[in-house]
Length: 319
Image (cartoon, one colour):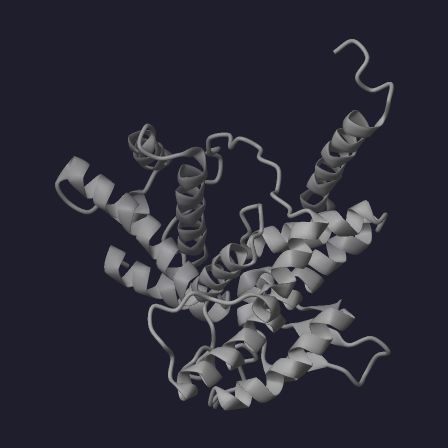
């Protein structure tokens, strides 16, 4: 098997067997192709896949230092490791040359969560604020903008009210909203990380916003099963949602920088602040490990220390 054949087979494996999104598959292939190009530049020809070694992988990582951050280098190593693991399964390699190689340590940053007031301001923005138009809108264009406002309100409430990843929200179909089986409306997340499914309760604000949006969805000429669609009736992409959140953050006068992932962090942090237990938050977020959820204890502790430091009369002694 040569490089071209291996990359084609790897692409099919990621897309079909692992159910990765086209964007994710593209990133994997680009990272592996960078390794191929690096080795070809060094040797003047392709390195036979069966001879791929740990020294080859380390050589590429060394070339990446200086112009790439730890997160980028770690991602590229992860892609190469997955590719080598795939080659082992196919019998091309006897062992994974990247298995024992550790990536650079990434600085541990805390999640950015909105405070409750900013979250409320953002949720209300599509209904209470105007947008600046470069020209006067026709009656038909204004009607379409109103439909999109209902969609945006529903999507914002869903992201903050359920903690879904933006990719999970974009992948939702209309049938994934279940209002009949349980006392509380539920969202069935069919395409979670690692292709895992979970159910998440849908709060009243999110449920009401989605109910108001569904007639607007028909007005946007949606023809498929996608719950959230663009003005052409096609499924929304994560990038479109990122732009939408930024637009309403500005229009709503939200003081903090908000992103779809920030709304997920806000969901978890505000639950923990309200004394929800970590295990429940782990299930709601779809974390495979409790360790991924425990970072929110540090976020809440920082918040608690700021409140104490600013409010308690004995906290400022000695300063």
